[in-house]
Structures are given as C-alpha cells and as structure tokens.
Length: 370
Image 1 (tube, rainbow, N blue to C red):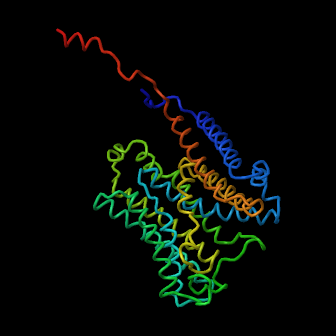
Image 2 (tube, helix red, strand yellow; image 1 turned 30 degrees about the vertical axis):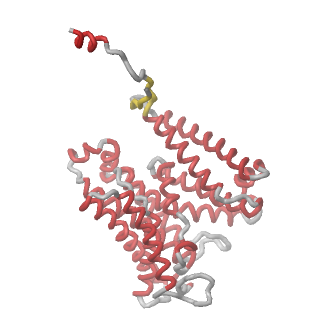
Image 3 (cartoon, rainbow, N blue to C red; image 1 turned 135 degrees about the horizontal axis):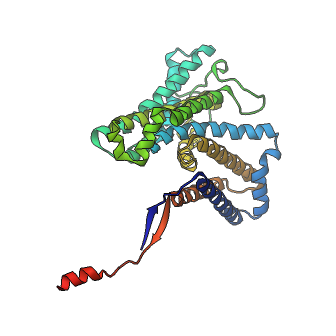
C-alpha cells in the first residue's frame, strides 16, 4: 500500500533540485512531442529555442515574448491570491473578457473621447468590469456554498457569449468587416509604442506595475501572511481571527480586477476594439492557471514561468509558419511542464511510504480468541 508522508527536512536546496528535475522531464517530453509531430524534430526544436535570432529582428521577437508574458504574469499572480487560500477561481478568461467590455463601456460613457486623459478612466472601467464579474461566483460561494470552480468556469462561456452578442448587436461596427466587431477607438487615446516596430507599448508598464505592487503585498505584508496561513493550515485561519468568507470575497475581487485590467489593456493597445469571442480571446486566463502553479504561487516564480511559457508559445508559432508544425505543440509542452512541476513539488513536500496492504495483527487475534 502506498501513502504520502510529509517531509520534515525540506530546504531551499530540495526545492531547487525538484525544479531542476521538472525542467529535465519537461525537456525530454518536449523532444518526444516534436519527434511525433514534426518530420524534422531536431530542426524544429532548435528553431523553437533560437527563434528570436531567426527571421525578423530580435527586438521584434522578444517584444512578442514580453507582451504575452505581461498579460500572463498579471493574471496569474491575481489567481495565485485565491489559490494560496484554497479559493479556486478558474474563470479568469471570462473576467478578461468582461474587463475588455468594461473598458469599451467606459469609453462610450465618456462620450467617445479623443483625448489621452480618458485612458486611465477607461482602464479603471475595465478593472471594475472584471472585478464585478468575479464577484458573482464569490457571492454564490458565500451565500449558497456552491462550488466556485464550476461557477467561475461556466461564467467564462457566458462572458464570451456576451462579448459576441455586443459585437453583432448593439455595438456592431463596420458591416463590411470580415468579422463581428465594434468601431475602433481613436489612435489618440490608445497606449503609445515604446520601441518602434515592436509590440511593446506603455500598457505593458501598467501591467508590470500592478504585478510588482501585488508581489510586494503578498511577500511582505500581513495579507500575504494571512493567505499563507489559509493555504497550509485552513483551520488556523479561524483561530488567527481571519474570516473565510472575507477571504473568498477578497480573492475573487483581486483576481478579477487584475484579469479585468489585462483585458482593458489588451483591448485598448492590441486590438483597439472588441471582436467576437472566438477571434478575440487568446486563452490568457486558462494559461495563467498553469503559470500560477508552475511558479508555485510565488511572485518571482510566476514571473519566470510567464516568460518561459510566452517564449514557448511564440516559438511554437514561429515553427508553425517556418516548418508547418502544428502550433498546438505549445499546449502539449505546457501540460507536460505542469504535470512535471506539480509532481516534483508534491514529492518535494511528501515522501512515498510503502506498506503491506494487509498487516496481520497478532495481539488483536489473541484478544479475539480469549
């Protein structure tokens, strides 16, 4: 019989060793995946690892990596707040969509302005939209004790349908467009480009600032301590005077607000308009779940994991165009990395204990016979 026994000798070196093992396992699985999906696996692997120096300029390729990493990191650290407290919000994709809708709503409520002063209010409207959407499963959890994992997931699809409805209905833009979309925002209120010819823009600075603020809060404040208490010893949360219901509200509010901010920045900087869900949502919310656990819910780990996954995603897109390899290879590598890191993290904290399934108890048998 196999059981798990908590280790008492966990050190920083132990964690680094398990991370190294997970990286090796992920690399081996990635090579196997490329061997199956590509006729030239060695070339595909090399090009995926070195794509910034191939084809277009290096700053353009790295611009794409940092762009994706910013969205993924800020959503993931928001989700980690709830995951630390055993509050399972997996609906960040829907909160991202409602953040975009909220930002466009703010633009319309301001009278379709063309001055840069309106941008902070538009982004704030996106934060509010994502936060309010996240508070729906929080309210259901607190008042009806529903499973927040299911309710937050179902709201993703509802949010996507709302986005598509607005694009084909009341906010429909140019009827000659090849897809359902709204009229675009004026260029004057969109975030400006940081480096000409790249995907880097000032909206990414807003995301990284939000990430840094929450990272400091989680690592150095009472709130971070409170979440660590809730994660490792849920019963101690009550003894410490923390309310579990307040933790649910807070976790969903923070994660929804950050996902909404990411959606607002994406709408204003990347597309400049709303587009029907299937052509707009990039699965940032779902990928951020993977990144939160790859980073072990630690802000520094999340930042590195976001960059790693973004690098793999952009590299997979590159080899898809260059070598005609299906870019779903990135999703497979993400899943392999998740299982490798979660498996090694578990063995980092617990050891396998083997025992006989049926142990003969002589003292019990002698008592029964007497």
